[in-house]
Image (cartoon, rainbow over all chains, first blue to last red; front, side):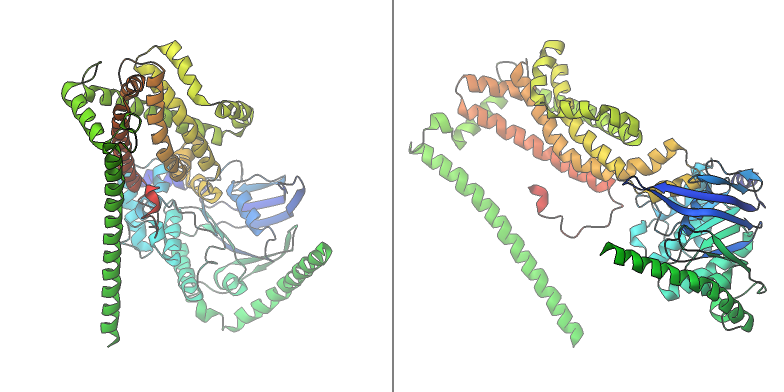
Length: 284
Length: 283
């Protein structure tokens, strides 16, 4: 009974699509200048779909996630999740940040238990649930460690557990594994796929690794250089479950898709380099 | 072979460290003996005037007299207790208020923008003069000293708490918000713990200020306390008395500092161990 009511609290919009319509976000820099991060973004992600977003560095991919999660509000346009306009933190959202976001003064178990606790679970319930999640991500025995005592890969696992424990129906991941070494990264990606297939939340996954994007996603979105907007959307029709991502990239269909998407992405990457170079020349 | 060499190296390093520690200890004891001995001898032979300089033996005699026969205003223990009580209450009040307002102003930029000039003005005042106001308002008893100590403590803690709140990692705040934290819960789970290292850094200075506040308050007008003991000794040209009371204050301050270090260790257990916090602590 307790557990049931808990999952209802944390999963109120289960099965909702994500719809961004004409979304623009402008920032004011500390020097007082306006800067457009994304411009007129239109995007629809079906419920339970895994969407990877690729694009040149610093093009506003992260901004798309912060707007969808409700951490920030768009300057123009609307974001709807499950038919409801985003206004404040989107219910049922989880967010794995690029940089460590674990609270360094809380032990591993307290970090993982924080989500349920903030949603009204008692401390005992939350800890029990957290213990299960630590086992799921392969970290039982590290409950009482502090984050700084763990390796980067282990901290990412804790981060995943701390996010997934709230049973998100909508999962934002901002280059979650970019700080990890190649081997750890492959293991973590496989782990993520295994966990995702259990509960199937809708995912927006920002990455600059095209191989990773194709291997895990149902849909790859290519964004242009800043101010960013959606350039192309590719459906990835590789069958699921896809198994080890290290093996799938040798399949014929994978290579075909890779070539197609890379052609689209390369233009943007080259334009981004050209812009950076001309900016530098302008500085001189 | 190489294993044996490693053991040798480790043993050598340990032996060297142990020798060094002994040397430091011997140096410390030697310094104390030299200064106290020279002081005693120079005053014994009247090379310097014991009337102005006091003497170690004179100080011990004076203290023994105070402890056994008490002072003009009650037992010496009671004077020590009064000063400690004033410092402690002032410390607690100042720290509580400092943390509260530091966090409040750090979290509400409008409030801090409005109040900043006034806070700067009050902070620029030599706050010791407030002691006189407090004596007028609150009388010669305990409250005026507590108030002065609290005001001195408040500003140190306030500025650090404010700075600590301002330097919170936005990433952690966003993480907590996504997990479902309300604004108050963000403050409780993220902002306050994050500012704690800043606040604790200020507590060492604050502790010293709370004792200064209590003693100066007693100078300005009191019925009991170590500050009064010193003021009386000063009026009687009793150099040994001034030094004796100073010694007691020093012992209180160092003990409080030790307790603080223990509390700090507990509160900041989550931090990665620093490699070199051995020596600078005493300075």
